[in-house]
Image 1 (cartoon, rainbow, N blue to C red):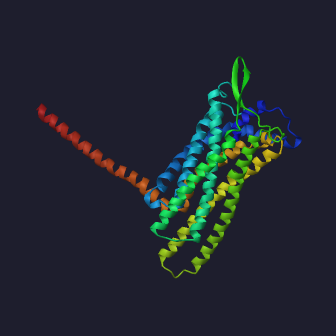
Image 2 (cartoon, rainbow, N blue to C red):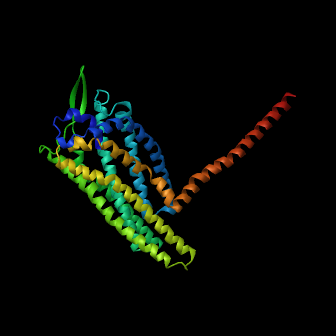
Length: 377
């Protein structure tokens, strides 16, 4: 999401890039793709926001209240917040204006302060999302290791999940505080008595960075990217081992009743679904973590490599935020049944009521017509 500052780089920095960062092909691709990025991202958001609303509606049903579904619900809330904030950003900075231009209308005081809020907000929601992904892996692994059942156990785990979600939201905000303090706007003269605002250069890798910038980037790259990715890899591996053991146990239970086998099959599908969610997080977040660390240690890497890749990283993150509904429908039979019961039954009821309403309206119309004829005779 830091790629929103691309338009400021040409005016905010005057350093000369070393030969190793002369990436003409990367720059050319970035400029070409930026023409379409706004429209593609708006299309993804137009589908992703309603689908995540479906997720929240289904997962908050009484029969669906489990610790895993509680975390998935708040993951959908975080994804909606990410995409909803991206809509005005993409509309103004990509669709209405060129991503590679600076103008008084595009870089006005109002819109640049919106951009400042958006950058911090989106970074926070991404941090929340990835740590929710970590909590999914931990809760699932703990559930498979201790498959205790009962209403009291379920309530305790649900309370624990809600507490973890609260801690993740508060902790993500605290981790991002140095990042909130790193961005500053400066006024520039655009000619013809026109002024605009751009972000001050961070001067990463030059040795002249402000300490708060380095602290913010270290915290963001380590606590919001690297550590969650490592934990996802560790617990994802443990889930794979557990899943393999579950498949082996299935073969030993061929003579058991169908309810038990169905329960085991459901557990395997849930584990596979969560593994796919975690893999998508790794694909989205791990490359960004490596690139951010390179920005800290290598001069001009931020301007010459990270910024041109920003749109590509943004679109991957948006896709990751929008496809969970398809994944849940594909992997969870209980999710499909609840969705069909909620939405398809409502649609069927509307269609069933329509003929009755139409018939009653016609009967009432005929009755009034007959009364009118009687009175006129």
